[in-house]
Amino acid sequence: MAHRWSGPSLARGAAAALVALSLAACGGNAVDTGTQVTPPVPMSPEAGEIPDKTHRATATIVDGKLDPERFGGQIGTAFELAVTGDGQEHTLKIAELVDSKTIAPSGTTNVTFTIEGEPGDLEITLDGKKAGVFERQAASGATGDNAAAP
Image (cartoon, rainbow, N blue to C red; front, side, top):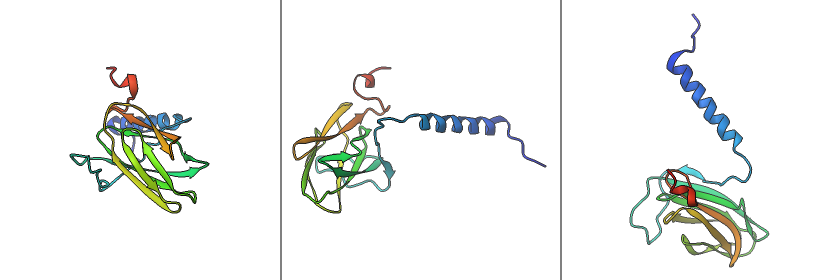
């Protein structure tokens, strides 16, 4: 006898398809929020507690900028940005989050930090020049003025 989809199983399947379609429709200049990894990355010396979630994203230095150039994560989580060098040593900073991290000329350098502070966009610099943006998000995923809205 063939199985008929009905009731809660059909509703769950339809909801999952709707979520997948919604996510596929979101394109353009998307923020790379990384991929959740386990266990959490090591904490910065200033951090007081270990976050439950850690996200990891990758970037490559191309023409003095990060590729991709937009990253983001929720306040209270740990973040690891794996940066691949371009043959020259660089100094990376993320306003309010990373004071200074030397990026090796070759291979990958991991920049780990805990996302703290208020929602909004923070400038990422390489050698003092703008190289990208880190979007600090509220737990709801909202940023800036939208973070306080109900």
